[in-house]
Image 1 (cartoon, rainbow, N blue to C red):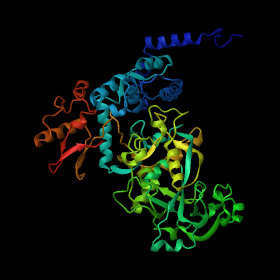
Image 2 (cartoon, rainbow, N blue to C red):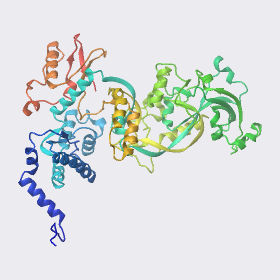
Image 3 (cartoon, rainbow, N blue to C red):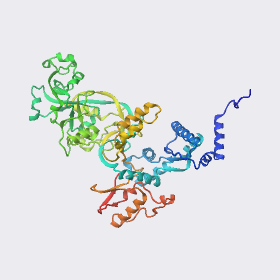
Length: 586
């Protein structure tokens, strides 16, 4: 019986692949697959662009194979499937690569190297491995049109992004806000929640935690708490970030939670103290057997420390009470700080049932700080270092990983130094190592901070419910991706932070007056050209940097006659409707 298919021995698959590729190229098979369906219904495909400043890896092969399968399937179904290639040429990957190549940091830009020269280096670096990518594309049989790719650093692409941003602006979906945002000191930029949601960004870390003692002030409103004390009266608050304690301006309690006073001794100084914490958590800090010990019989240095519970009251009764600043390096310029407030985020799952509030370094803290007018203290700069007000800690990185000479074996966290200081001052009640999940920058692999920033946002929360509804209609494989990681991200969706404190990227096309009352969002190069002409007439600019641009012409040459990157756009000033000068927003 004749076999239906020819059998091969010692099949040389690489040679077969080479022959097939040669045939495809020689006979223009990809092009013919498009020509044969020229008048068919189109199926639109734009490649999610890779970055050509890095070498392709096996994960790129897998992703491209999946893309190719869908395009070929739709082609076989009779669709016209034009496949437009693209190159992702902006952002952190490029900048970090250039900074390493030049041996500089982000602080050097504008000092030892001009912004223009830096961006020119980025432009050169970004296509460093294009030939390798093209070779991979050909060898794996991935059909995509490389002859006319979209390139994200080109002016035409930037103009497209501007067009979309203006559409959002006109619908009231683009706004400026001051909020606490994920910020990467190592990269020098804010991060979106999407970036933090990438696999591997959250890592398990061991931090030095501290239960700090905040000394309550005795006055008319707090007098009822000061009866029958054993030493000074403190509130106990637990934190996994002792470096934020100098920026503390409030303590939060649960409105309906029950709290108690406990008479005892400080375990480090042996001084008599009375502390306040959640009733439910007393057993976590005071072993039941020690309740049988007498306070009067305690001797300094004893491991078993006696305690005595006194009183029972709610968080609501503590609201408004005042306490002494824990680390008085600086005071808020505004607000009414160092008060006890109520917060619905306070629980008894961890800590003491009392939460230390540093409005500059946490979203909940920021919210409750504004609600109660607690003021704020931002004693850390954007490099992740303590500011000059911090005395002996000035210039020290709050996370040792930010230092250029960081060594995981020898570098010590400033948290340790702060804890030692508080122990000596009778302001530390308990310290221990604590393992927990903490977000890291997806590009530098260093821990992020939650930091107060002025930023521009897209109101994605407006569409949260609609996106949740649509997510349920997607046939996710595996299903857990849609209901788990992606679904959870949608459930907790916040407005999209657009602002990036970088140089090589699409600039935000918003110009504002100094008082912030008047602004304009530019949606095209032609519109920018016209607005600059008005600014020249108003005397805010001497000439038009787009003078060689011909509005209405879409030729490649016309769009190469200028550059929409920094510093060009930073040097453009526009005129408002009332005749005021407008500068570009970052």
